[in-house]
Image (cartoon, rainbow, N blue to C red; front, side, top):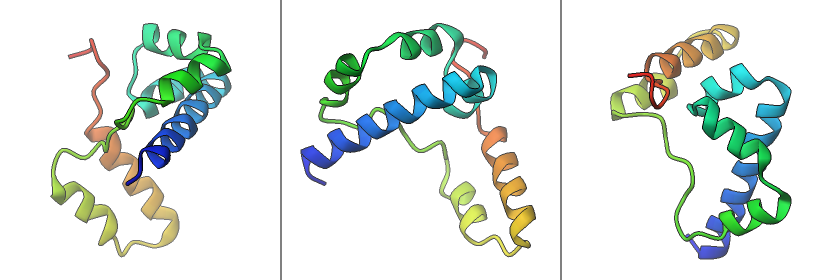
Length: 102
């Protein structure tokens, strides 16, 4: 992957994170797996700061799956479409730990 693509993904992720946090702080903190101080910091960043932060040469986000088996459960899911989303949410929630909450 090219550096410019990483920067674009980082910026998109940061902008999405801010939007989610503005829309529903508690749900977004859970989905993004961030604590309140991090959420507050992300919300306080200006567009210029987001763009500067996005310029790092590594991803600012990571896959939430610790094991390949977890990802396989989602990709091999044969449940009806409505239940598949619920199943995915449960799998992701079972793997989530907010920093500082261990």
